[in-house]
Length: 393
Image 1 (cartoon, rainbow, N blue to C red):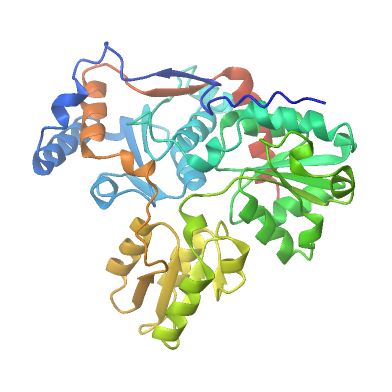
Image 2: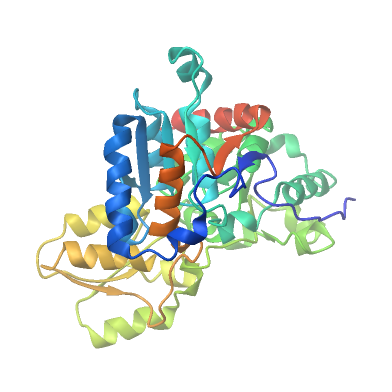
């Protein structure tokens, strides 16, 4: 049995150009500039580069960054939209590393590169420290070790691995190689159903809550969903009997933002604000998800608010910047952040105006800093897993 649980960085399969000495402009200088000057300089570069530049802003970004984005959305939607651009030469992804990886994979699909006569689209992440704690909870070495351990007690030929889009490219490639697939929070149910049509069990990572909440909705009992702890020495902390009767094996991972919401937060809002509705992301724990009036992806959360009548009251359990933006955009409704504790996506928050301006001015002057480029073999297998997801209806 394999007990080598060495954790590797989720950027192991990347070739990256970081904050290197080749940068013409030093980052430290930009941190001394006032926001108004940074905005003006960013706008000037955007005008100069025109359609050859595409800035993507994830919903969880700060407003000061979002205002400079050409496209706004969730990670996969942004990558899809960017990949369709015919004039774009450089994507600057204001998000986190796994999002930039996906953008590189989709924008540089072999068919699209051929259409551009061999030209690749460069993908840049303004701050290489903008990672994802959830994605980092499942390193490829750990997942491969778990797969090997499972094979000693169950037939892994009949296990379909499913990775959440919020994962490193190396994990997407693992799924591609092993007959598996990628899912988003909006299509997780359809993807898991697809997996059951092809195998007896599902191995779901890295977010246990999305996997559990989705499987429960499909009628699978929690007793059939053991959690695999990559730091436990024996079968992820489970017995052979537990793994043997499993239907969905969940990875012990979570989103640090959505993990913080609690049942008492829901109860408190309902007591203090009669008639309020609870709207949460399925990355929240089951104890919260089960109490919600509506549970859904970031896109569903936005659509739900946009399509609700004036006077509707919401307590929303997702990232703070998005909740505050919805509150500002819908003054006709009463919108609250579900937790009394301020919590934001700290890694996403690392993308700021100094990093964006530094990235863009170096790009304007011919230097690409913080390039994200997924290794060819990893990209090939990741794309297979992503294309399987696109085929699911």
